[in-house]
Length: 125
Image 1 (spheres, helix red, strand yellow):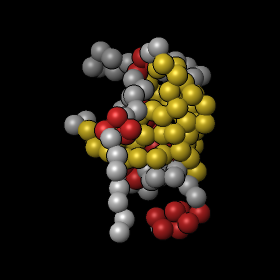
Image 2 (cartoon, helix red, strand yellow; image 1 turned 90 degrees about the vertical axis):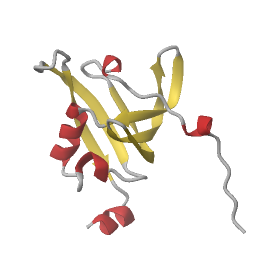
Image 3 (cartoon, rainbow, N blue to C red; image 1 turned 30 degrees about the vertical axis):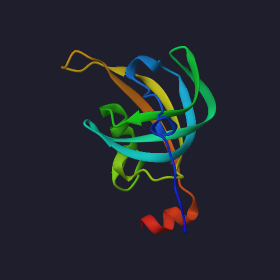
């Protein structure tokens, strides 16, 4: 018999909000979880290098489908866009700056590279 056990706290990872990002700031990591929020899909990355979020160094962070990130993933050609990111995808993400919007909040812009393990890539075709 297989048994699984977990705690909510073990699955939590802080979101990287717009205030985290400045031009040139980058992260790299592997998608380890996907989940839905009231604002759309999100992923959790296990980072190659920890990042400071607030007063803590974090090894895992959550990324939501903000407009700028969604557009970068779409431009990269990932099948299905942001929602098409898969567990085990390796991601390099760098902030390229911001753009003004009509909503009053600047859009954070990104450059992204997504590498998918060969067996996963073949399955997504």
